[in-house]
Image (cartoon, rainbow, N blue to C red; front, side):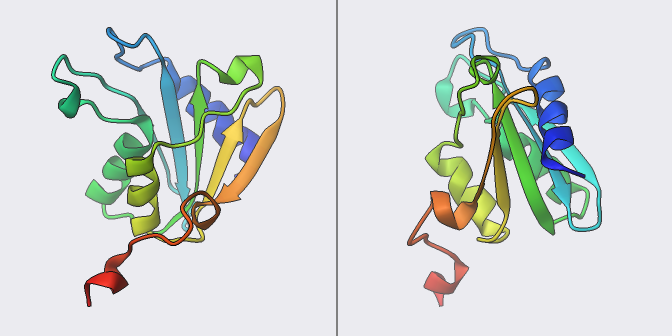
Amino acid sequence: MDNKQLLELAEKARENAYVPYSKFHVGAALVTKSGKVYTGCNIECASYGGTNCAERTAIFKAVSEGHKDIEKIAIASDNSEKNEITAPCGICRQVIGEFGLDIKVILGYSKGDIKEFTIKDLLPHSFTGSDLK
């Protein structure tokens, strides 16, 4: 799956966001190395600690279905249509990195500019499982 197609799926997932407080819709779509696709949206809670980002929603869905071999993840927000990128927050970067520092992160707008990073680019000097040994 190419980056534009994956970003289109993230844009579609964004439509399902539950954001009564921030009003900021985010969608994510990931593809595993075997080609399986999972999407997610951000889900807010009045107790902000219960809020979950789109990236983690997609990752948790994939992992709960037995897929940890993430190849890339695309993220689309309300800023996407303004041709602005929205990068993952720190906790999402940490969760993405848990499954591989070479995972590609696709940001942008399917009808505009698309940027690609690795999670290692976005989270240099990361804390990983090897630090716990």
